[in-house]
Length: 415
Ligand SMILES: NC(=O)c1ccc[n+]([C@@H]2O[C@H](COP(=O)([O-])OP(=O)(O)OC[C@H]3O[C@@H](n4cnc5c(N)ncnc54)[C@H](O)[C@@H]3O)[C@@H](O)[C@H]2O)c1
Ligand SMILES: O=C(O)[C@H](O)[C@H](O)COP(=O)(O)O
Image 1 (cartoon, protein in one colour):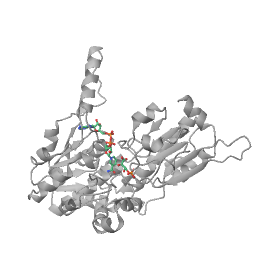
Image 2 (cartoon, helix red, strand yellow; image 1 turned 180 degrees about the vertical axis):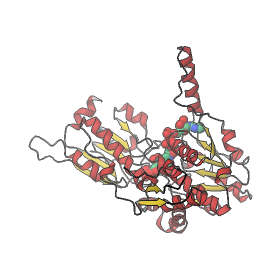
Image 3 (cartoon, helix red, strand yellow; image 1 turned 90 degrees about the vertical axis):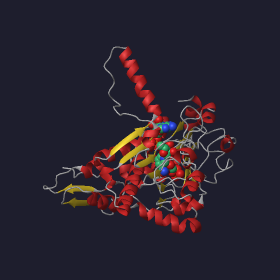
Image 4 (tube, helix red, strand yellow; image 1 turned 135 degrees about the vertical axis):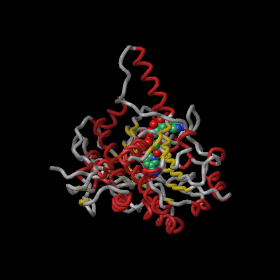
């Protein structure tokens, strides 16, 4: 840890947190009062803020700043603050953080890798189930192309594996890492490292699949940029019957090119959770989407709250104290906490199971009906509680022959 960080954190702290961070009060309130002044009268403060409108003046005396993806953390926001000792983002994506600037100022930064990856995978699965029902598709006959084999792409891959759905992954960075590992291990005369056994394919191969699901960070420039990875040129190569799902970052698809494609009569089925220029949305594109939502793929209660928990753990570590709380202390039971299945697994059962926990059509309806009256950010702020599959315990009757529900992430009865 940086000397700067240690000396700042031995005082009562002002912890600023995005009001949209579940259980922030529960996790952080004790931490800010932890190190009172000598008289015990110097209390810290836990201060919520609205992420989109946060100003440099507001955070001028913050010791700890906890944000979500809508707050740009950069010199403009932090130039008035000379005591900040910890910045955390309770999100997977970090494209809103100027990490170079934070590093220059020796301010430790933590994000929450993977926190809502399961939520994103369940969003994609819900979208697939809904489209399969709408267009009478046999999911087991489709191939799914995943762009980005990190946390969200991998959680999706696991669920597809559980369902026996063929899928391919394109991730040139992981492919390079795998090849490099193999070269090193061979050079050292060791057996080849088998930890990452996946076979990576080219973007072209993934773009030829029946379903394309995007799971990459926003990267501008460099060897493998993702900014407008899907553009006029490669969108035009897609077939009418394909499904394109994006729940990563809006800038990964050129939204104007996508609109032009659809306006020209292309049959591509589109599922969009993320939009170029959020919170503004290319309105003309909405009627051409099958499912449209307000960047909520990662908004399961567990997914958002895991972000809070991960930052709590990181801050405890920096403060050199043992974490006292974990997410399980705060999560309520699901509204239907347990069910029993009495039949063999089928697409119909999958449809029922997935929609019981999360039916993406609810969020699509809210988006279409309330975007213009409520606004994009308000739909996200007032997002209804959504649980992950794991919140529901599935018991299989002895005559059912498949463990697919548990492999999909539903909990098992503990005994
Ligand atoms: N819609 C939502 O609610 C939501 C929720 C979570 C994450 N996200 C977004 O999804 C992104 C991915 O999340 P993650 O948890 O999988 O991140 P991750 O960092 O675990 O994985 C991203 C993967 O993308 C790969 N990648 C980078 N450039 C690529 C390229 N040009 N082509 C193919 N692969 C490439 C990386 O090698 C990495 O393996 C996040 O950065 C975030 O922006 C959105
Ligand atoms: O990067 C992420 O983790 C997700 O996009 C996340 O859902 C963003 O949510 P936000 O911080 O905008 O509330």
